[in-house]
Length: 177
Image 1: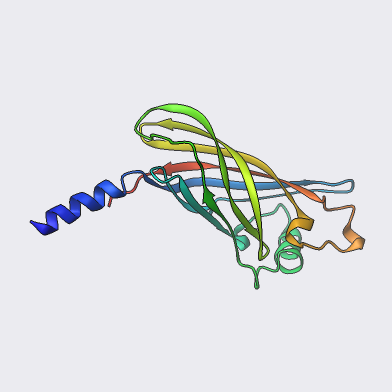
Image 2 (image 1 turned 30 degrees about the vertical axis):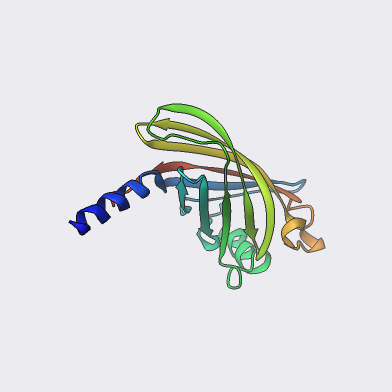
């Protein structure tokens, strides 16, 4: 009987936890001499809609560039992927969201964004489209290289913007316990 009670409580407690599936994280740098873009579909994360807490992370080496040389420089010279292999975003949102109810809404996700080993407090507006307990999410925000101590040599200063535009999208789904 205790086992059945535990199973019931476990299922009830985790009923609002959703996990990232089918994600896309891309960024774009518009600079005078060259535009740079990259994309990864390896975003990992969990959102607990009961508590409003979330955690996302992405392995930096999973970004794919149009040029293998750009990808190499990004990983070795700018992001130092051997030293800082992951970026993460951990925090919460205050608005209560019921994923059992189909709806479109916006939330402000507040938390700590870690890039290149540096933590910054950020607030990112996120659009949610909830249909049949599946949550589609979309966010767009800027990352300032100086905030994360990402250094760009003077020789390529005109090739890389100081502000990087980031787009994140994907699905959040419950997993069977």
